[in-house]
Length: 108
Length: 231
Image (cartoon, rainbow over all chains, first blue to last red; front, side, top):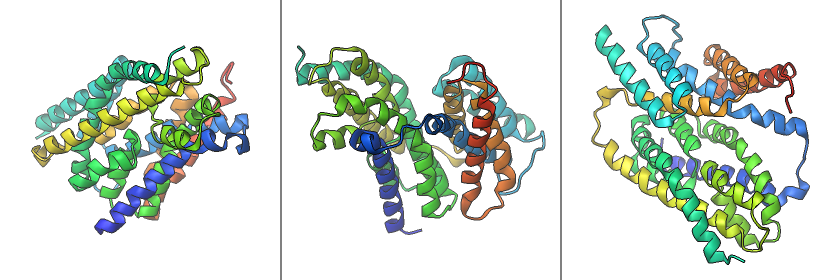
C-alpha cells in the first residue's frame, strides 16, 4: 500500500492512543465511573494478547495446523516457561528464539 | 518545597533504571518492525507518532499481514484501552494544570512513565510542582525509546531473513501476557481468546482478532464471578 496510507494509519493510531491517555486527565468529570467498566478493562490486555499469539504459532501459512511437528509450538512452550520463571521480556525472547533454532536444526 | 526543576530531575532519576528493560525492547522493535515489512523510516516515525511499545508491534504486524488500515487502527485502540486506567489514576493530581501541560503529560503517559511516577504523585507531598516528576519520567522514557528504535532499525537491516526473527513478535506478546496475568480469570480470558481466534481467522479483514478479544473479555468477566475476594 502507498506511503500516504501508511502515514495516515500511523497518525490515526497515534491520535487514538493520545486521546485514550488524555481521556480522564482532560474530561474526567464527564466520564463514567462504573466498576463493571473498569473490571472489563482488566481483561483487555490478556484477551488481545492471546488472540495475537495463537495465529503466530498455529496458523503460519494461512491454514490452521495443530500438529506436534510444528517447531514454533515447542519454542512457544519453552518461552512460556522462561517467562513464568524470569518475568523478563528479554529472557523470554532469547529463550524462544534459541529453542526455535534448536528445534528447526533438529528437524532439518 | 521542591521546585519544578527538582521534581523533574527526581523523575529522570526514577525512570533511568527502567530504561534497562526499555532500551533492549526498543531495539527489538526496530529489528522486528523491519522483519514485519515496514520501511525503516516508518518504524522510526511510529515511535514518536504512536509512542507505545505493544501498540507499535501490533501495528507493524497487522500492516505487514496486509490488514485494512481501519482494522489496524481499531486494534491498536483496543490494545491501548488499558491507558484509560492510567489516565484515570493520574487525573486528580493534574486537575489544576493549564491545558498545555495536560496535553503534554497525556502524550507522555506510557506504562513505564506511569509506573515510575505514580508512587511520587500518590504518596509524596501534594505540592503544586509535583507534575514535574511525571514530566521527568515521561521525557526520559521518550528519549530512550526514540534512540533505541533508531538503533534497532540500523541493526535490523544487517540481520538475514533465515533467522525467523518475525517469531520474536509472538515471543514479545507472550512475555507481556505473562506479566499482565495476575489471576486465573485473566489467564482464562487469554486462553479463550487464543482458542476462538483460530476458527475466526476465516473472517475477512482480520476481524477475527477483535471477535476473539471480545470473547476473551466476556470469558474473563464470567470467570471473575467464581474468584474469591475479587474486586
